[in-house]
Length: 371
Length: 126
Image (cartoon, rainbow over all chains, first blue to last red; front, side):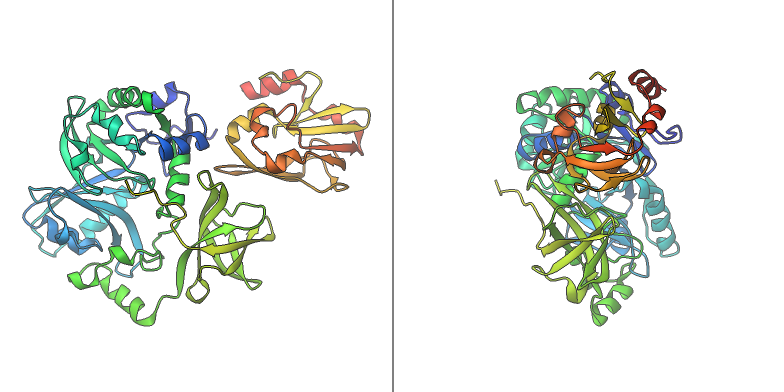
């Protein structure tokens, strides 16, 4: 194993080591990639409940009379449409339209806005927000609050029943993409019905000092449902089946959200925001490329970075790919020229110098049955 | 899992069982454990020539692809077809039923350069 001494650790690091999780370097963080088996952990989330340490994620708090206006200026979705205790998915853009990060925005009754951002982007996001709002006169304060939070995700059809044992907050009253402040096992917690797995579930934000105790209590509470601690491996296969973007793969500084099928989080009519002018030009000119899903038709697994051919010529690249434990086939996402990005079309993924047949399919690959 | 004394090992985590000029090749228990759930095995065709130290196939787990290096040179005389439909057998029995290929050794003298079971386990411990 490579040198890991410079890697950042979550408050659950010792817990992961004690449970013999396999640890990896993930964007500068020393994180569990799996505890038992990625397939078993994946399946626990689809059929029961799984527990994820996502404390590496960053939190940014925006406070003050114009907190909402500031967020609406730096992010693509329309935060003014959020009711207090509601959350949505959004993106931070550069002026040129490329993506700084994809984020969750939560609106508090006090007017404070609570942002959850990607682990390895948090300092970059914070600096970006400060830079693009400098001199704009927003009466609001932006605070990088990550060190005050640990985050645990309780995901799966039995997530609610598991978490409910530890909280008086009536979880069934929290709708999907809403949240509440309450207590979990007698410690203050922000409880959001959000997730990155394609299942129902909750993401809870707590004090770092409480993380290990809560982790173990949640594992105990979920025992009857076959709860499993889950690593980044399962988190990735779960989000890929749900065709959710991963920053650095489907979204980067040179990819705008319209290309990534995220027009639904870009509200062009809400007023000025960073990147809007660039996206307007993109809309006028038309998209040059698009993100599509594919199924491998022949033996082989298309992986991140592999070349994609159409009609025998290089046409694009795989952004994420791998086996789908739920669907038992090999799936992936890739960028292709817009004209070629049509479901049903044949493509070839170049696997170790050989073109292997695949077909473009609609996404998501997996969608949970509505309760 | 124990490492059979009659196998020879590589630092790339392959094993070979040599009987006369015939060799059976697989990956070690350590290799399967590091990879995690194995979902795909890519093996050479019958009659293909493999060269010690060069890749002759790959094993893919859910999260990654890993090349397999030939512990000895030779010609492929058998491939374990069962792994095509049941690659997970590699996680369960890497030193037994989930062997990868059999070869006819072209340079039997290469075997002496491989690790013994004791040396391999010592290497793992380092």
